[in-house]
Structure formats: C-alpha cells, structure tokens
Figure 1 (tube, one colour):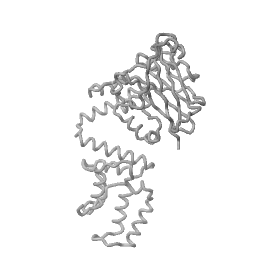
Figure 2 (cartoon, helix red, strand yellow; figure 1 turned 180 degrees about the vertical axis):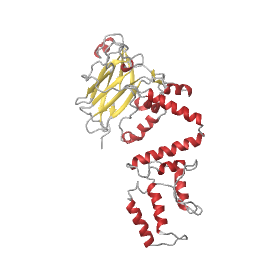
Figure 3 (cartoon, one colour; figure 1 turned 30 degrees about the vertical axis):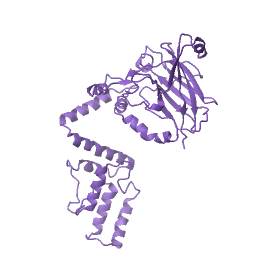
Figure 4 (cartoon, rainbow, N blue to C red; figure 1 turned 90 degrees about the vertical axis):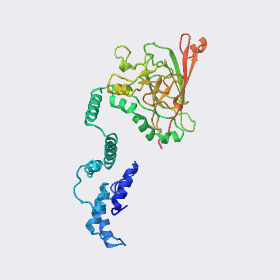
Length: 370
C-alpha cells in the first residue's frame, strides 16, 4: 500500500463499487463530538507506530472518515479539494458533508460516483452532453396529467423492474405472487362492482371471463381483499388514450372478495400494443433498434388488511410479444391460463351470448406485512 495506507485502502474499497453499505463514520452513527473524543483517546493510549502523529493529524483522518472523504495521505496537502478529472466525484461528494439526511447524501453520492464513472468510461463529448440534456428536457415536456414519460424511460431501461425486484424479493421467497411494474395508465376512482360484473362498457371485443382466488402463503382464502383491475381494449388502447371514444373508466373496476377468497369478472380479451412512441423515449427505442410492444395483459393491484399490496399483471402466454416485452415486465409465474370456451351452454353459464368466450384463470398469493 506504499506510504499512505489510509488513502490506498479508501481507493481500494471505492474500486469495488459495493453498494448498500456504510461509507462513512457518520453513517455508522458516530457524532462529530465522538470523532474528537476518539482522537483524544488515541493520543492518550498510544500504540507502536512507525510514523509520528500529532492529535490534529489523527482528528483530520477521522474527520475525513466521518464525512466519507478520501484521506489526504502523507504526501498530500490536507487543504481544499479542487476539481480535477481524477477526483471529480470525490470533490462533488465532499460538498454534501452537511446534508440534513444521511440517506439522501448516500444516494446522491452514489449517483455522482456512477455518473462521473459513466462520463469517463464513454469519454462523453460536449456535443453528446448537450444532446443528452435536450433529450431529458424533451422527456419532461412530454409529461402531463395522464402520461409520465420519465416512468416510461425508466421502464424501457429496465430500471423500474430492477427497483421492483429489489424491493419485493422477500415476498417471492415466502411463496407470494410475483409483482411487476405499475405502468402509466392506472387511475384512482375506478367504479366498484359486484363479483361477476362486466367492466367493458362498450361491448367491443371478444368476450372474456376472468376468475381465481386470493389466498395467503398457507393457501387460506383472504376475505375482504380489494382487487383493482384495468386493461387495454381489443385495439390496444386504454380509455385515457381515447377520451371521447371509449367511455370513462372503461375496462376498469374494483372488486372485493368474500369469505372464499374468490374473484371473477367479465371483460373483453386484451390485445398487445405499443408503448407511446411519439415522444423522446419512442425515438430512443427506434434509434437503438428495439421494439416498442407490450404483450397482451391485465393489470392488478390487490390489497388486504395485514398483507403487503401486490402490483402485478397477468399475461396471455400465446401472445406473439410475450418474450419481447419492451418494459421487461413478463415473469413466467404471471403467464395465466387462457382457454377458449365454445360450448353454447358453457358460454351462457359464464354470462355471455355468442359463439365463444375466452376463459382466464389465475390465483394470487399475498405476502403478510410481517
């Protein structure tokens, strides 16, 4: 490690890029007063050391450690940090030493470190930097009350699904149903229906009957579970995308389970559709040679007292885009059972008139809050 072991160790651990662990004495709960006290104790109880230290030297090292800064080292001036290519992220992070929220400082410092590393890795040109700024500006301008282009960007880069995977891995370990992205088209205030009701208000599309059970991880039915469902129509559009064409709250509804935990509703078979691709995210996907399609699916938010909310989809396994979801939302466990019922009596029993009904069955398991 040469003559500056503290500096060398700091650089070594920084190079590992380990996330989610404390990177400063402050994050470990040390106060600045405790740092000063530690320096005093170190001088009162000296140990064998080939180098001579004054109390000010020890306190300086500990202050760097408290802030999470790179120690100055034997051959460096322990003065102001000036910006340079080599120490860019370190200099920026040093300005956050007095952050009111340690978690905020941790997140922003990690963002700065990775962003600066990215700029250095690709050797970003000034023209590319300006182009990136314009892209983010256009993304913001594309947002409105019902469209969130930044969420769409996060979805298409796989970030939304990564956040979901990190925050819900405990649920899947205990046998609960897997979650997936919320998507940009959920609306509050959907109408509440009785079990078996039809959420399709314009009778447009192939009829579909959906049913299943809501249980705990031991297979016991959950009474009083709220099931918020929404979907695109057979043309691949949500009601908010066709205001004035589709009825308000078309293909949306909220149901509540009874003692048996069962749910059912009637609807129409959803169709695959492209994400909104008339904005900067769609142009980025085109430039990257990527598709913009989402496979046919139904959205669910399931809530019950004593259980963690479940945000998820179910997918039609026969959809041609089921392995090419542009937001990476498909999981094998979310492939539902889609069958076609053609027997006239069976069709009537499901509450329809006509030659066929698409029958969908899928159960959900909720994770206890504890």
